[in-house]
Amino acid sequence: MRAGVGASVPQRPPHKASAKTQIQRCMILAAIMHRSFRSHAHSITGPCLRCVRERVWVQVREDGTLVIQEVLQTDEGEYVCEASNPAGTRKSPPAILDVIVAPFWVKAPRDVVGVAGKEVEISCRVGGDPPPSITWRKVGGRIPLGRMRVVRDRGLRVSPLRPDDAGVYLCKAANRAAAITANATLTVLTSPRVAEVPGDQEVEEGAPLTLSCAVQGFPAPLVYWTREGSQTVLPAARAPLEGGLAGLASANEEEDAHLEAVRMAYHVPRAAHHHSGRYICGGVNSAGGVMTRVAVRVRPAHLLPPPIISVPPANQTLPEGGHAALTCRVWGSPPPTVTWRHRGRLVTATARRKLLQDNTLTIEDLAFGDGGEYACVAASPRGVTEARALLQVASPTAPGVVFLRAPDPDTAPGPPPTPTVRASNGTAAVVTWEPPARGGASPVTGYTLESYSSSEAVWRVAAALTPLTAFTLAPLDPAEAYGVTVRAHNAHGVSEPSGIAEVGGGRGGWAQERAQAKGEGLAGLQESRVTLQDAVLTGPTSAKILWQVSRGFCSFFYFYFFLFFFFLGGGSQSASSWHCHIVLFLTTMITKKFVMLFAAMIIQA
Image 1: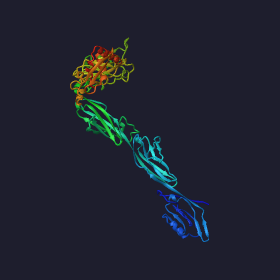
Image 2: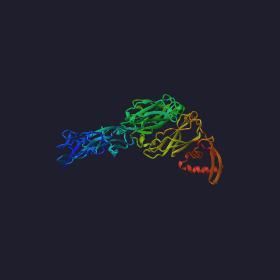
Image 3: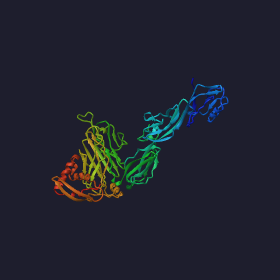
Image 4: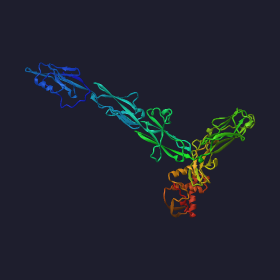
């Protein structure tokens, strides 16, 4: 007959024992955690008592009961009570002692810090017999099941981390003996990211300049402004976040709930020429750093463009007694004032005529006297710009009259991107542009190029309804600065103007001042940058030319293409034919032995 005794062990890690305690010829009592197994015999000999009492935690009572206190795993096994006297010896059936070890921490959970997008592991290594089961949960939230797994040593691994993974995680270990619980706080650091930038700025000389930048991350990033190439941090003030994180363009309510945002603003009360340049907004925290760049252009007052009428009024034919709306949207720096003239006379507000806040002129209950030419006049210190439209009023019953209202603005093309000045030598410049992103209700049929000069603050049409996307602006005065804008046309109307591209710097111009500030100066076509070493004809239409750059870096082929285009008078040539023109021009020059002209036309980049 076999008997078993079950015992649970207090939460104390076991230590090694050399061998199981052997107890012979004595009566045994195993008393563990208020549970006992008793076996009685008629007598206990002295040597048996001495053997049992060598162990600190083992005790034999006067009645022969064996007590094992603070049971260890090494106490597991079979116990046999052997009783002997002069009459003989007798053994009890074996008693099996099964020691159950309550869970204990081998490596308890500890607070951890991770970086968003990376991997993190929270430890939870336990011991016990039988092996404890492990349960993980998050306080006040859900475990990210799709990105979480329990690793071999029962720790919790999360990858990739997200800001909303931050929180308190509980690890519970349990077996038949007991259960233990410990928690760890997971802190998720988020590298800074730019949430708001002002974009490139262009301000008038003497006007205030403010650069504001918002950076978010965790912990709250340190945000700063500096100029590109400088090691000095600019004095910037912390600006409030209207609406908090939700007010930022990049805000994501779920992912950004744990982030902190900081907005810093660099302010200059009166912008001067030397404030032009590139500025850097940066943010750093313990998880990383980020930078973004913006360009600032401070235009001298005499280089500001004249007012621009972005949406001019349109010709209309309307019925008597109807309603008319003449649109005139303007732009300028400083903001222009807008007036309307009808047949040369100033238009004032009346019961039928109203001037809206967006400068639209409305006329109710149209009469025949309302017909005629209307002019929208935009004026500022930089000049005057005017746009005209014809309003015809006809009887609703007049035969053969086709009434025509102003077209829907969405049917016209969108504005083209800002033109690019590909090459300029002071007296001519090649201006190119891309088609608008939105073509409107019909295909784009052409473009109108308008320009102004710093000395003559008037917009003039340089090219009207050209089907090309390139134009050579000439002749130019090297002492002047010019501005260029482009509009696109289709069958339904004309687009708003593109951004303004600056051509040349002129005396005191922005481009010249920027170059001088960097110590570069301006390189003209007349200044040599190379030395022609040799020119050898290799065929009837080809040549081998050797040269040496004297100083600086020369963008050789880039400028050749467009300079050849100038000599062809190429305002009417398409970009796809430039290569053919270049070959023809090279052939003409080489056969006439005008090879020396090559070196003179190289421009420093």
